[in-house]
Amino acid sequence: MQITVRQLNKRYPGGKYALRDIDLEIGGGMFGLLGPNGAGKTTLMRILVTLLKPSSGEVLVNGMDLQKYRREIRKLVGYLPQDFTTFSKLAVWEFLDYVAALSGVREKDIRRDKVDRLLEDVGLFDVRDRRAGKLSGGMKRRLGIAQTLIGDPRIMVVDEPTVGLDPEERLRFRNLVADLSRQDIIIILSTHIVGDISSTCSNVALLNAGKIVFNGSPDELVAAAAGHVWTISALDHELDQLRERYPVISSVPMEHGYQLRVVAEQVTGRAADPADPNLEDAYICFMQSLGYGADVDAGNGGW
Image 1 (cartoon, rainbow, N blue to C red):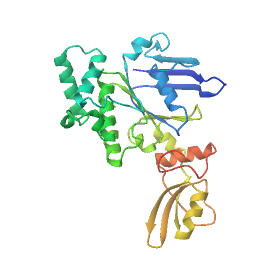
Image 2 (cartoon, one colour):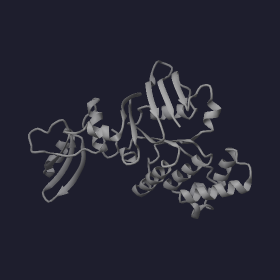
Image 3 (cartoon, rainbow, N blue to C red):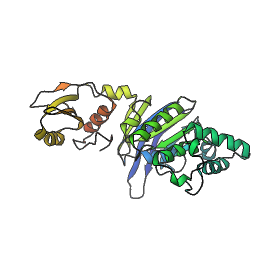
Image 4 (cartoon, helix red, strand yellow):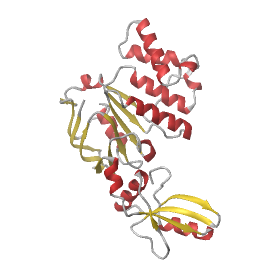
């Protein structure tokens, strides 16, 4: 499978661009689309799953033009939107059975087997009789993955999947999607949380203000941050001042103050030791180069 995006634009009335001159090549495995809230990620996702028409440009899916072959391409795509909802009064298995019927699985026995297998895969078989509206946030996202897979898609598009999840469910969700990426499908994971893609995506695009500002491997993005990450020691009374001056990735309490990990071209006026960058460091470093300062929110991977 291959998705090719050429000179894609989405312009709204009044002249504002949500997307501008987007060029991408997306192949098999997991592709990460990273960027702050409002960057245009959801607009791009909705175009790729045929829910929104672009103003201009071209999207090809295995050579098929998205504008001409919308029905055929929809059959290839599974989509988990950020605002995924269920029929809350249906049992978990009933909801998934309903989605399977809508996707064209007509025989009840085949649907039942497929529903049970997917519930096992996403770890929800033991709660199959629980009402969907009574699931926890993490369970609902796993049910969302199951309904995305019910039609055996070749392309899976997941938008902001871990927003609002606790750390345990976030890790479970990442592992689930990473396992899926080993199958013969494309998974496009859109997020503003760097950790969602740090260990799973072989390629990543950074979207900002509707434009692609980086497109390459995570290693290439990390390499660009070399020489811009430092560790410094700070006393308690210095912490707020340093946070105003530098993006602070982490602050580890020490016996007398803190050890800080900061992103900066250089640290002036105090001792600083260079540190090897990771993907979170690289994202913040890149956002700094675009003009965002120390208000970048390192903990959430956005600003």
